[in-house]
Image 1 (cartoon, helix red, strand yellow):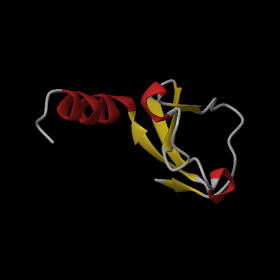
Image 2 (cartoon, helix red, strand yellow):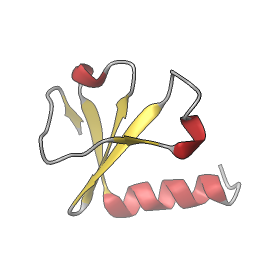
Image 3 (cartoon, rainbow, N blue to C red):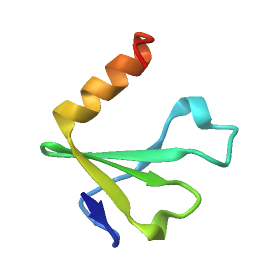
Length: 66
């Protein structure tokens, strides 16, 4: 789902791994939903995913599956 507006219920954060980089994504969590946006264009909107799907993606990256 693409949302082309700021959502006040989301508190976006950058990964600690991207502290020195300017081009990264930001992630926010809300009940049942995880949202991702471009840190260089936060006003452009965000992509929202069910939290279980986002957690599965993160785990697959963490374990080297992706």
